[in-house]
Amino acid sequence: MARRALKLASLVAATSGIYLYGKKFLDPNDFGAVRVGRAIVTTAVITYDYLTSLRSVPYGSEEYDFLKSQVHLRSAERLRELCCANRGTFIKVGQHLGALDYLLPEEYTRTLKVLHSQAPQSTRQEIEQVIREDLGKEIKELFVSFEDTPLGAASLAQVHKAVLQDGRTVAVKIQHPKVQAQSSKDILLMEVLLLIVKQIFPDFEFMWLVEEAKKNLPLELDFLNEGRNAEKVAHMLKDFDFLKISRNLGKLYSEMIFVNGFVHCDPHPGNVLVKKCPASGKAHIILLDHGLYQVLSDSFRMDYCRLWQALIKADMKRVQKYSQRLGAGDLYPLFACMLTARSWESVNRGIDRSPVSASEDVEIRSNAAAYLPQITQLLNNVPRQMLLLLKTNDLLRGIESALHTRASASSFLNMSRCCIRAVSTYQRSKSHSLYRRAQISLTEALSLWQINLYELFLWLKGSQLGNWVIALLSRMHHSTY
Image (cartoon, rainbow, N blue to C red; front, side):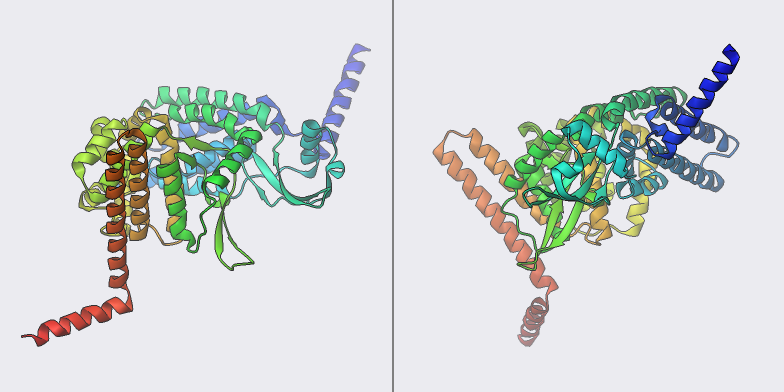
């Protein structure tokens, strides 16, 4: 009798599970055992692949480099599949890894970059459930219309177009279900797995990534915080009216980093839109996803400003001084190369003198792999504020590279202007002497005037008018002899 009851109960449970799964009310991803098991298996397979595939091949040989690239690619694809399957926090961390061009092999960054634009979407039933739980009402009670297909989906949420009862058209950002509840457990799981991997590969130093996720993820899941950030940055940049998108994206971030010290730290292609204004016909930059901002302290911001001024002027003594003040220590040459994504030779020569060549790009990537232990040591030593700035720099370079505007002279000139303004404003705020403040303002005006003059020179040099002037001067020179 008991056996028949047990069989009947098992049959009912299995039938109910199949029904609920078929109706999308039950998702295997909701079960901690499934998510943990999937992560453990993926980590074990990747670790085993690295341990066995390269064991019998001579280190440094062509065969070794080829096999290592293949292992990198297989491991990156497994990691991407894990992120897409577990979703939420895993996709967010995968996106971060995809931006670490200065640290990870190209196979990883290229494979994981797709997570910036191909995040999984929540279903209509899941969206209704989240709205019901958070607001206590049904969609039809809140909106006149609500589009089922999201305008965009990200790692933690997705956005739908809707019309409120008063007729206003709005964008509704809805957090994926279970993300809030699963996030802390997911981070703990990642921390344990990374500690285990570090025992096997002692040079593997990625615990800083977990620490950053612990600190930043709660902020990104707080939509009230995101709303406040959006309002603050809208007020901060209200005077910006852009004409050239690629150049002015760098100008926008120079303003945020150097002048305001309040930085949008997730500018991947899915979060930066370009829209043509119907009234003026001008193209405008639209920043999305305001959950993750970094507030820079004044002391950090001033050291960072002065470091970039030294890098642009190729002043190696000041590069060393301010790199060390930012925690780089004796690794300041490596730090300068990571910040600029240029070779040490280019940094010494001047990063504004010549664009990045294909051979230099290859050199940078090769050095990144060779100096991985030193890079991880550096990342553990620099202030936490620097980690998000490094990520932001790499995301911006990716956009510039796609638009073929990387390392243009105008971007360095705009950066120089912002650094001069930031340092001068800070110095004036610390000075109690009217004469000293006037002196600082005069120095600032002269420095900005020099930059404008140099920019005019570059424009003339590259324009048809400039060519005519040069030809005329050359003709006049020859006619005098």
